[in-house]
Image (cartoon, rainbow, N blue to C red; front, top):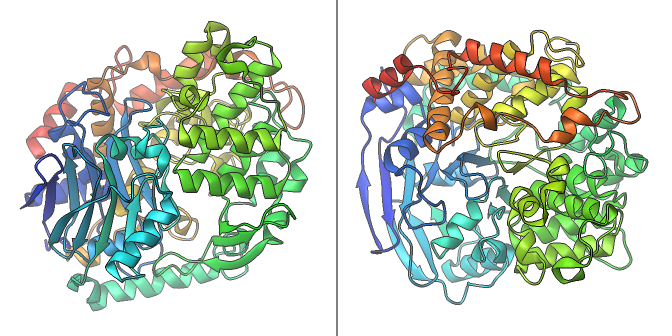
Length: 609
């Protein structure tokens, strides 16, 4: 077997301002492939148990996958792994753009960043040359200001700059890390960088990946690109190239699962104002990731006379979190809020759910003048924008709101737990599982907390892809979720875009990887790898104190039926939910009482590495 890797990583110590190259044994690449897989192994093996995620002992890992940097469609993504300060769980995030290609071009498969700097610092990586630079003049700048300043300092407008904004510096627990306007969004990776006083990393490289030039691999690339061109979702003029993810608002509204007013409702009266055409009208041009034939991203502008904003996005999750969930029906407000979050470095999902939570607290008169007399109504556009600034600067009530919904609820009082919309501390994305029951199990068992990107059941439950399923039923959902979690784990191992997966199958990925590895692979080979990695992230979370008791949902989803719309009356039945969980644990081979993978699986993992 030939391995399409450099087999080289860099371990960077911020405390001593030193670095060293290191190598991984072939067995790691064979059993965990790359991306999230290698990241999970490195985090589990190098991070002490139960450490504070904001302590110098936490580590940050940037990685590529086996296809990253090639012209295989959707292979542009790069991965970031750490322990989440928001949830305390395993955290992996990934972005598109050109970051993954740039990291691959340095000749490193991964970077491990450890320790912390006494003073603000940034790291310049040029091939295998790593230089530590003073970031005092960068500290306090927004993400775009930081990128522009580093580009000017290096006299290179093509350099990839991973950076945090003010929110990361001040360790807002849902601060993101950005690169070229793309976000490693969820779980607070930006706060980890801020705790290390690491403002930015610039990445340039010229190292070639010779295995991508093989005739066998190029033939698989040709086949895959043809499928992209022919699929109605990804072809020119299809949903993703034309609208990006904004069309999802119509899908969730039509199904009655568009979270509205902090999940009090499943349909939004102002939803039509936020449909894809509204943002299409504001589109300036399309934007593509490296070597992407789809081009789902868009540069948009506001139409408001008050603002003149031009930015990338927003994505559906932002439209939900800062739109319907806060009862905001003005596209320009959402675009402005999206840009503010990007500049400060804030996860838009968590930020929107925090604000909708405060709105409901005010609606129910729970705050009663506490916390500086905070008052924020549903639908208050100006108040929403001002509150984002306070969170980003962590000023006034923004200090408290920067802790996220879980800690915020614990601070305000137990009466708010009912509508604190998070799982394992991670604020929920824009799909109400009361109207799509597999999503309930997915949120509960996701390795990084409430997340739809660890096994997208919406394809089956809302879009009927590849086969329709009864979205209100519980039967068969445990096996569906278990299979999808393996599949999505593998996509994050390959560092592949999930949208390309609408046109491509795992036969395509298997063939492409087989051509690189120089041997025939089967989908079953990959499925076993996906399961191995999913078990390892579960082991990490169990080691950090998580158990079956944490595999649950906010009380609202069990107790409050959706009041109107196509999913009217739907709720998560506790008995059926528990039955789904029990069946799921059995499928996974996890102990039903502890949630841990079996002893045999633990032994296998460590005997293999």
